[in-house]
Amino acid sequence: MKQLNFFLIAAMIFLFIGCNSNDTTEVNETTTPATPMGKVSGKVLSKNGAKEIGGALVFTFDENSKMYYAYSGANGEFTLEAPEGAHIVSIQTGNGSNFRTEVNVNIKKNETTVLDNTVTKLNQVANMAYVKGTYDDIESIVTGLGYTLTQITYNDLKVMSTIAQYDVIFLNCGSKPGITADDPAVYNNLSTFVSNGGSLYASDWAVAYLTGGGSNSTACNMAGGFIPDTKLCSINTGVSGTINNTSITDVNLANALGFNTLNIHFDLGSWQKINMYDTTFWDVMVKNNNEALMIKTNKYHDPNATQVAIGNSSTNGWITICHNPSGSNPVTITIPQSSWAAHQAHGDSMGACNGSSNSGNIFYTAFHNHASGNIGNSGLILQYIILNL
Image 1: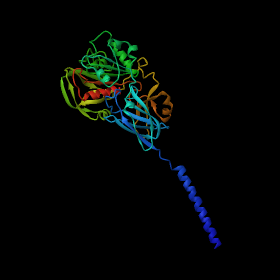
Image 2 (image 1 turned 90 degrees about the horizontal axis):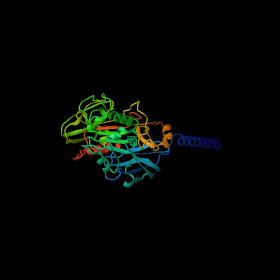
Image 3 (image 1 turned 135 degrees about the horizontal axis):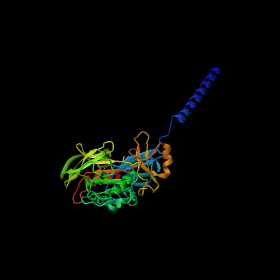
Image 4 (image 1 turned 90 degrees about the vertical axis):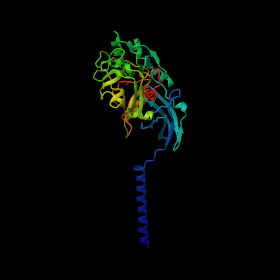
């Protein structure tokens, strides 16, 4: 009987030690406590609160530089899920260099923190300028969003030190005079401006700044401009009228607007039809059948351009990087220079995720905002361009 008790006790001790050892291994090697999560929601608005901003990137990071992000819908609303704790939540459009807002948020476990509209308004960082036109005034849309810009003249475009003060320049339709002796200085300066990170928006007849010609472009391969003739040709053969059911082919633009077709009204004849474009250089954002009506590039760079500090973004302590979220596509964002070391260690790279790392954006539209008329939904497209330059 005593011998049986001895074996029973020994077996129990063996089982206890074995089970205890296995439990410890399970906790230390395979069990990781779940990260407590919470949510933050709000609505992205223009600076004056008048417009809801769709397509804005809303993001934050944890202590390991892991990115948590969401996009605002066409109504400006967003919901971001992220780890609990104190966070800086960033709201950016475009690559974040020209328009962005930062909000300090204490995210609570299993709760949704709703941000007040006063802190989710998109701030202007860029210095912006425009050349006044005859047939449209993009400046009215810019100021209608609550942002500011400075009027400059065609002669100002001849002076690099003048245009280098700005991050974004809007070239209105009808702003370019006929051929002048000083045109080469304008073309060279605009080339240098974009090559150093400045962004341009040109509408309709203002394509002559890009491809050459006088006040507009009447043929392919005209003298002047700074975009190579093999990249773009636009000829002023458009007739007045409405083009119905044009397609928004850019997914980000369509998501930001909440629709993917629209009618575009051309109230003047002789508008610039895009006759030819290089599909490897330009992204088509709006088209009618196979005819491009709105194009964009960030691939222009003149390797011989003088290095010039452009606008406010070059001196404000922020940098644009390509962040590589785990399991997701790379995302272009703008961050404080002081955060770069952590992002570099995470595997991020300097510059935009695609295009030329040094280039600014160039947007061109065959349509514009018709200084004398109502443009309907195409006005929302122009708002998107402004905020994503």
